[in-house]
Every structure is written in C-alpha cells, then in structure tokens.
Image: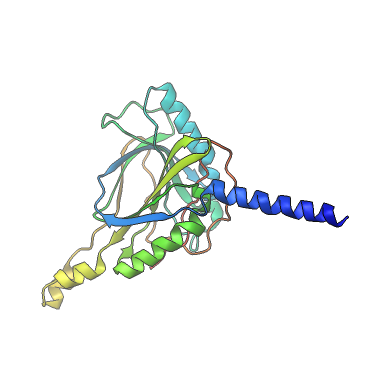
Length: 244
C-alpha cells in the first residue's frame, strides 16, 4: 500500500514540475523602459473575466487568416482594474497586432485601435501568460516603484506562439515619469502645477467606438490563478499585481 501512495505522490510531484517547466516558471523576466512605437490593433471587445478572452482572440485570428492578414502577434488589452471593477464587468479587447499600416475593411463587431503612450515599462517573458500574475507582474511592480514611475490605466500583452511548447509574451505597461517631470519642472510651482502629464492613448480609428476605461490603478497583486494552456493556445494572464 505504501509503495502505491509513494508512487502517486511521485507522479503528482513530477507532473507539477513538468507543468512549471512548461509554463516557464523557472525562466527569467527581462525588464526595460522607454518609448515604444504606436501599435495598431485589430480586435473585438470582451466583457467578463480576463482569462475568458481566449475565444475572442481566436475568432479574430481565424478572420485574419481568412482575410490574408499576418497575425503572428496576437494580443490582449486589459482596460479595467480587477480590484475596482467586478469580474463580470471587466472590459478587455483582444485580437491581432496589425503588421501593415493599411487597415482592411472589417466585419461587424471588429474595430481598430491605436495603442500608444509617451513611456512604457516593457517585460519580455519566454513563457505562458497564464503565470504572468505570479511571475511577471510582481517584478514589474518592483521595477515601477524603483524607477519612481506612476502607472497609467491599461496593460497590453502581446503573444507570439512559436510552437506547441514555446511562446513569447511581451507586456507593455504605460507609465508616467513622475520623478523626471518633477526634476525638469521650473521653480515656479504654478507652472509646474499647470503642466499636463503624459496620457495613455487608445484611439479607435475604424469600426465601433469603445468605452474609454475609467481612471484606475494598474492591476492588484492577487491575479487569476495559473491556468494550464492547451499546447499552441494562448492563455492570457490579464492584469494583476501592478499598482501605484
């Protein structure tokens, strides 16, 4: 009997280790900050739990393939703070990053937005976004605080699936350079007070007009529990773990 129990425990531990290795739990997160060129996003709106956006992304990917568009990079744009918005009301936008500047004619339900901001914290992770809330977001939170940045609403996750066992997730966190702005401000406090801070822009340029996200901190430290991805399928993590 003991050897049966021991065998079961060994199998569980072995599977857990394989799962962590598969998700990228032991891989490093590369962090940097600076300007990022504006990205044109073709996608569809989603309301509800962030981890349930996968079918929306897949729907846009299927349409892009049929339309002859390059959808090498898919994305999830997460607009609300899960600490301030109930899960059924969380707004997100998922689909493909448009490689060509030419915007095609879109079917009903799809729209195009331009995602840009003056400054970003960028996190590169060679693993599944399913463990992003535990692996990536805490590191980004530390980086933002160490740099003295102020996080702006929304987080963009860009996914590249290389194979059934390999993918890259790049996270873009728009931030305001608070310390730099304070150091560059003139001694006149009125002038400094009147200066307009940088703003995140998510502009609709074709199709339906999205509802702009309310001002909010970037996501909390809780996050969704890690999910097991089907090989070759993107399982986005969604915002979690970053706040002022």
